[in-house]
Image: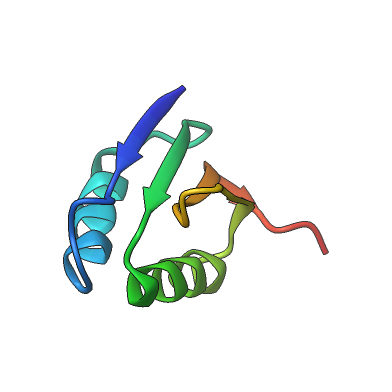
Length: 77
């Protein structure tokens, strides 16, 4: 599984980098997205839900948010 570590950047850079990554991603590809910036944590989760992606959220002890994303997988109804 690929890891997209966006922890070094602050909003809006992580969202921009995620959108660029998604342009190249294949349907069914799985990625772990790591976020530290509070604004990005909210924005990226909302963006992925708005796009209909299935995302599992895992809070880590160091205040880093990890998201498990399957590209093209829709949220269960």
